[in-house]
Image (cartoon, rainbow, N blue to C red; front, top):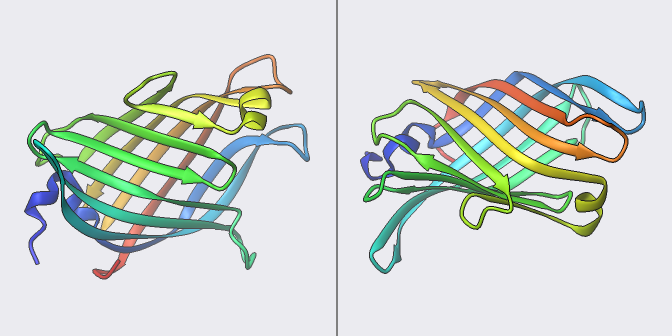
Length: 187
């Protein structure tokens, strides 16, 4: 099947795995920033078109989970959508993590792009960030950026979540990056 209508998202369809993940974040149990290596599995299932009046969206329903070493339960999961508006060349990633945070990141992207950067800011009414009351008070996310590169059967991401943390006088740059390989064209 051709995924031309999905623009730059067409190359992500399928199931991907990667064991080169590195999470650099504030660890509450240690009271400091530390690194966590992880493995990850992500699936992208195409859908669309979604008729929004004059706007027509094609999307990917996605789910991801990340595990530390040989631990059975994931330490991180996400569910969401990647959306493409071919008319305006608008690319969006909309997701929620089970800590009570929701992000809609986006940018204007060339339809043939194999690498792109999406961003979201706290307080924005378009590409924005929402959190529950606890996180807003103690670990407020103020910015989110992700760079994605799709290269055939490999895709890489490098993301930074900027956090105002109650236990740090400085902004914390929580980073995650991984290289995943497609294991199936089924999402």
